[in-house]
Image (cartoon, rainbow, N blue to C red; front, side):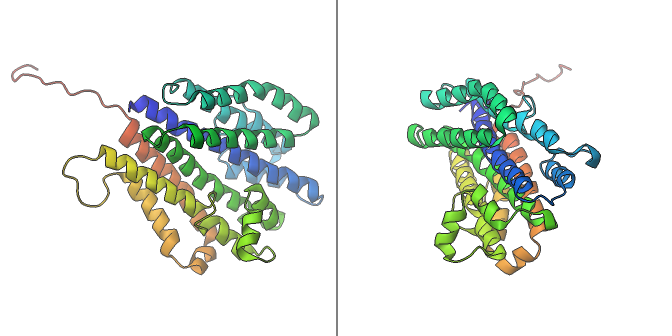
Length: 316
């Protein structure tokens, strides 16, 4: 597969997942502000912006700034609108390997964004969050139903999986690092779609340690960090199997696979109590892991090297 097309597919997966998860994080944030009249709105907004990688001075942080930066910005790929627009632009360059249904879904989503922005500013942002979650689910549902499980699929799902690890870690950080202003674990579980699966698994009231354990380590819930790492590792193993150099028989051949595998192994074999005891540190490590893995994937599969040119001796 051409590296250009592979890179487009990888970033479609990342951008659609980023829009979905950013909408979920903002939904938790806005619900918190509505439900708790005593919350320090300015500090909560400041902490959220810092957590999402777009810090601003404390005195300038407010709900309007959060929505302008993380929801409505048309250019920044860290915002909902910017991520969906970037996903659509990447899809334009990979239409030959995407099904018509996926392209139409991304195109319709992009064309509906101006109306959704207007409705969100007029009636509140919850309609935008719901729209983004539904459209993201449609894109990945169509990918499940209409794409062959070849390299195209692997790059798309690899991008989604790495982004999901990063964003689920950020969702957990909104609860762990916010102190007294933190959202309830029930709200966090609902925002990730994990509330009902959690109740069916533990059959009891929401407990902070069990909720964190579920979102980090559950093998069967697809939005957990462990499940996303495991899927990313599987995608990388398949991609390396089809791109492996002749004679490579020891270990793994790709740095990205090695990075993701180490993170997955840490979660799998480190004791749960040990992970939860230093949860903020572990979450920060997971976010750095995603960044390093993304760079390694780019270097391995997407960076085009200049062709070698043979120069006859004596020519300088």
